[in-house]
Length: 568
Image (cartoon, rainbow, N blue to C red):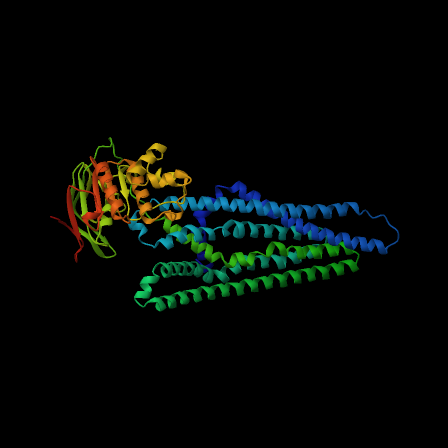
């Protein structure tokens, strides 16, 4: 197979899944293409008829008194002018609305697959990279219809249509247009795609690397400064930025060269048509008005070709974005499993010789822990010792590499994640709040909770008086990530949300983080009462940061992974 055929095959395989998504809205796409064609036909008609009308009027004025109907062509000029304006407006409005719908379809589908991935799969890339897939890569795919599919087809239809129209008046002029403009169309599509493929394909990865580097720079500024690595990191950043700028300059130059070629060929075609028209005029085979009409119409064809160089020099970027999204789609989601049956009785949670390896090292090894039904167990450990990993194993964020982890009489690895998590209330280390009202954030724990229940749970976490003092009460917006709240308030809102779930198994990771001593004592007392009868795994740095528990264990890091030791 030739390199060209191989490249076309690879391109089709990369874009095929996304072409299928476009096919779901094929009706809108065909209508959008029709509006593009109507706009281009109106432009051709306007310039061609205007040239004919002006020339015919001038010729008639120089002739003996003759009857000349100015109303029909004048009406035609006005009709084409109005049609061009209206179709252009409708085309832009309709096609951009279509593209936004398509992007919503793409983004929704990609996100739906993304949220089904387990934590181990997600850890293969950084959060900034996943975000880049969800935003920049999908945005790059908007070129697929708006610039890469419809415009070249419309431009080719305009070339063929106008060439056939020219043949009605001067066949040789029509053939000249075909000989010059069809190869130009191929150069602007296939040629520009091949010419800009490497640089645009590479640009997608470089943009992501630069974004990731920027996030690292901002989030790790203190650490980079403390370890004297700031200038080294900035050097890498500048190097990646320079590489991206070089690619963008190269693509800009090649697009400009293709635009210059377009202008040159269109001008040559117009001059050729004019020369052929003059020859036909001298032999009375063509009128002067028709000669001008064909010449100006040739110039109008450029409107359909003008956007092709920029679109097709970026084809490599579209293909690379599709490849990256295809690779993400191919990632294996969480395994399906058995659905838990039965009521909400407190379950047992048992770790038997559990081990987990991440990044080539053991994070946990030989962990044995038994939580009997209704028992509260505390696990104490320093930051990074693996406490949160114990919790993530319990909610099946990922599965252990060795050992046995059981929920009641079932291996957790055999349970459907959704079914398992429906019976667990999990407070993570981060207080995940959303840019919505206080009530909406609380109701994520129980969508059916009444206002009375919300006020009751706020009282349990010592936030009722504060919430009642707010001008809008439960309707107060908490800001992105709860930025309108203090750290302690955000923590208690997140805790209240877990309490609203009323789950039989509760996992609380640093539940009193960010609270002052007095508030912590109030919340401890409320938690002790609320946890009665529930199975609970409580995680903290020190026992004093947790309510009273039935037993307490310390997670001790080791060369072969962290292990649990009982505390006296």
